[in-house]
Picture 1 (tube, each protein chain N blue to C red):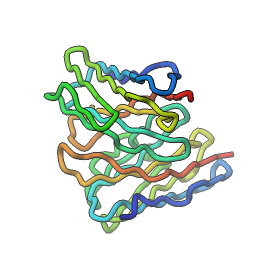
Picture 2 (cartoon, chains in turn cyan, purple):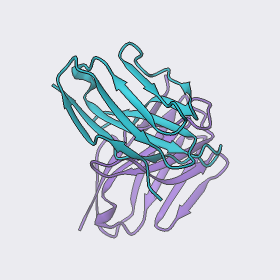
Picture 3 (spheres, rainbow over the protein chains, first blue to last red):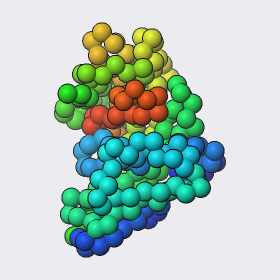
Length: 115
Length: 113
């Protein structure tokens, strides 16, 4: 069974440029998460989807970040415009959503460098 | 304020010894706690989940304890091997939602041959 797929794996952009990350979760997983991870820190939740509905986006900087999961399967996270402080690893994860068995399956992440 | 603290320093141990990693939390009442392993350049990988009513959970060479009175979880790797070298993250449900996890900053473990 394929794991969580993310692309691209690496992205280098100039500040003020837009950037988009794509995630395809494990088949059948209705819950999808986007996390941000800075060096030496744990993942921090940006947004959580239950199917196509964003049920928690309280940590998403909405002035520049947006996300969508139109058909409740794959998802895109966008930053526009990017700032120097956005340099980090962006992780996507999915889970089956069962209440006490919601281990999360993570993709390899996209390492973003903003110059 | 809510806080999750893992061993502040990296942990180096000799092969064959038991590694013990600590996860302390404040101002949370988690229903469960999870441990993940993360290798450089990769996403975290789930290892174990322990519920609030469970004192201890084991899986092969791994053991997790959960003390809701002390607000602490201990993660043990027995008979450690160099391949166990990685960063270990604890995560707990801090928001009241069964699907929301808050992660600690991790402990970097190095097992020396």
